[in-house]
Image (cartoon, rainbow, N blue to C red; front, side, top):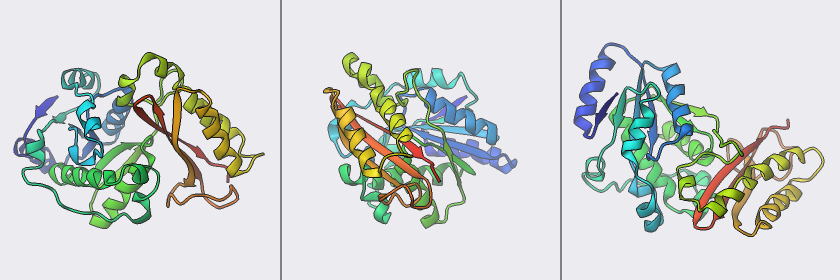
Length: 282
C-alpha cells in the first residue's frame, strides 16, 4: 500500500498501471474509517485490478463550520485499518492540494438536491459533486464504489456522471451495520454513551415499518416512524420520507410502480445520523 499526498505523484503511479491495461477501482472517503468502508474497498478489490482509496475531509460539502471542525481525523488508524484489506494506493491530500484555487462550479441536480438532505443542508451536494468530480478527473477510475447508506448522495453522483459524460461505473454497496443494527458511520464515534445505547431504535423502527407496508397506509407508516423514534426522548427525527428509489419524489401510496425507499435523519444529541430501508413490495 502506497500513500500519496500530491496529485502529480499519484497520477504518475496510476499512469504506469493504466498503461499496462489494469482497471482502477476507486473508493472516496473522508477518513475515520470503519468496517463499512472496508466492505467498499473489498468490493473494489473483487472487481478491479488496482484499488485507490482517498482520505480527504472536503470543506466545500459542510454547511456547518463546527461540523467540519469536529469531524474526526484519524489518518494513522485509517491506514492501519486499510492494511487489513487489499488497498494499493491511498490518496490523502491537503485542502490546498485539492483546491489550489477556489472551486466556484455550480451543479444543477434539480429535484434531487432540494429534498431531504438538500433541504436541511443547502449546498451540501454541490460540494460533494465538486470534490468527487475532481477526484474522478485525477484518478480516472473505471469503477467507483459508494455505500447505499448515503442513498441520496448516490442518486446525485449518478446524475453528475450522466451530466458530465464521465466514463466511470458507479457501483452501489450494501449498508454495513453494527451488531445492534445501527448503520456504521464515522459519526458514531462522536455519540455519547447514552445516545449510542438508544441509537439502535432507528433501524429497529425502520424494520418494523417495512413489516407494516402490507396492512397500513404510507402516511400511517410515516407517522409511526417519527412518533416511535421521538418517543425515546433522546432522539429527534429531522425528517423521514418515503420516496421513489430513482427520482426521490415523495411517494403517495405503495401501489405506485417501483421500489420505495424510507430515508431518515435523526439527531442523537448533537450528532446527526442518517439511514434508509428499501420497501420493495411490488
